[in-house]
Image (cartoon, rainbow, N blue to C red; front, side, top):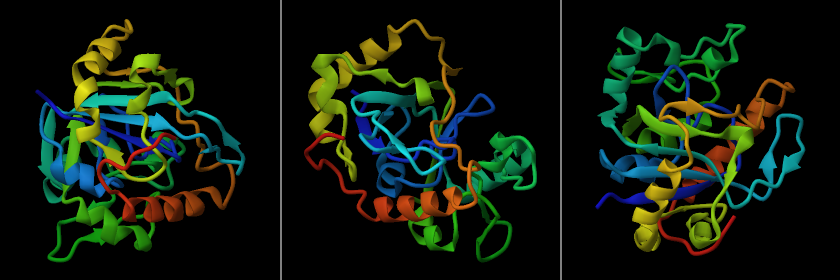
Length: 230
């Protein structure tokens, strides 16, 4: 049976996860999940009670599924860098692009030299250690992204929603089959982008900075199976 990982997303900005170009990827943030998740496992991001918007305000998204992805491929971050440079260039951040999807590209780390360097993107140098600690990139062609149209969990699955920090895995064991049946039965085709990211990183000059800082703090506390809800 696959594992079901769930965690709370306080910053849904299109970078982590990155649901664009037909492949949903988790490459930055959540280092513990990226190290341990296997092909076939499910990753679920649920909304925060104080989900950040780009203008500094918040919105209550608690108890809602922001995205769900079945891991269909796992590779090292160095392999992901090579993969994106040769086969999926859109995931390499292009900070000057007018297309915000290119600006939030998650292939931030360049491994073409002996020491990986950080491309200009949504993360700052302070994020590098925790990002690289995850070691792996998780990819999915079987995913559902809801973003600002996040759907509420049904009452019997409400405990899947994790608290602000850390993630759930063992605590989700009683819900794996029922969650998969429920999410697959919503009527959406895999690869569907129902909504758009709730947090617009480019709504203000400071938005990207405080998102990067907040994610760095959150990732330091990426501990498994903390009890609680968003």
